[in-house]
Image (tube, rainbow, N blue to C red; front, side, top):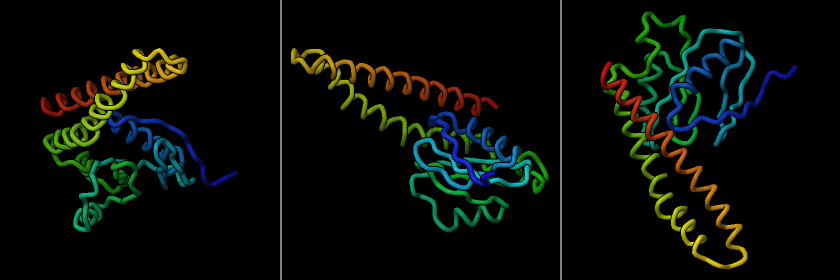
Length: 183
């Protein structure tokens, strides 16, 4: 039996809490995260099943040695980075309270994380959609070339996919932001 496994699992930028819960369950089942490969490959190593909290923080290369030292001081192990997300874990047996199992000390910090994700990930996706995908879709509709049908279908699929993901992520991040503002 192999002591490593690769799992393909897709999470959007708005699904980071679900990703944390999924990684927690994997560890409880004896598989600890060792590496992530974009966009959706998770490499696990077999381990002793343990109750371990996984937490994600989003940074755009703005972290420094003090940032990582702060996490180490609070008992968090840095696992790695994947597309701006930083992965940390900590055995729940080393926590004294529910707050010890969190990397954010208050809801204001969580709201700041969500705002940062919206500004640096969701907004650029919207700009790419409005500047690249949607205009090409419109252009392909207006073209009477024989290949235009193929491009029209391709850009229609891309347009629908982009619209769905933008709506899903935007609404979910907004709902999370409201949840943390009202708690």
